[in-house]
Image (cartoon, rainbow, N blue to C red; front, side, top):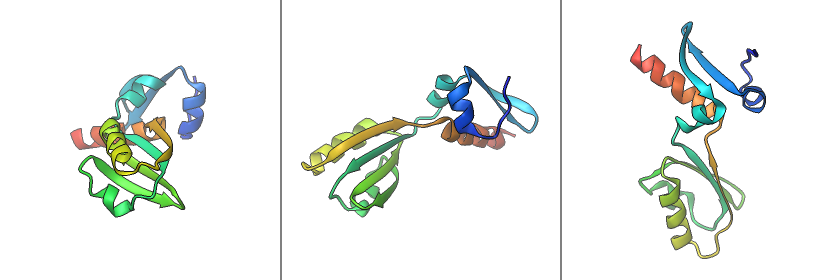
Length: 116
């Protein structure tokens, strides 16, 4: 048994995870099961598209640029990737990553707080 506030540590070491909120277990399962509870995905790529253009797409939650690299947060990764490929023929270094345990924890505890 491991108790920690360092979710990266829990994600790397744990076979099963339980999330406590207000002294109660609000979710329990494997790390993969916890991550699957969140639809959110992060898309990273090199693109010449403007952030404002991408941010206007209905499936996009947020967009940040770091030099040429763009990071997009979305619940509909497939639709956003299709749009990226359509709009930017020079798109490269495309990566799609599902939510980590930290994002899942935030979402699970938010839902638990809303239900309380």
